[in-house]
Image (cartoon, rainbow, N blue to C red; front, side):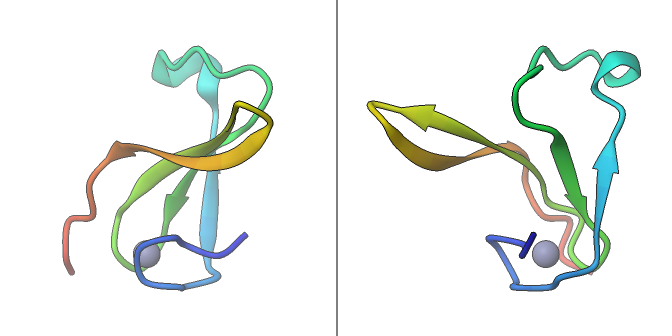
Length: 58
Ligand SMILES: [Zn+2]
């Protein structure tokens, strides 16, 4: 999955059970390039990006 912030494709899936996030349906991703942490969720039938942690701007 592409990073919604910088477009980098090198993303890491975070173990949601140890990180304290509650998203069971969609895995939480972290961008290896900019540090953005996000997950996808469905709002009114549409997929939206939910930013959990802003990019660190490496
Ligand atoms: Zn990124």
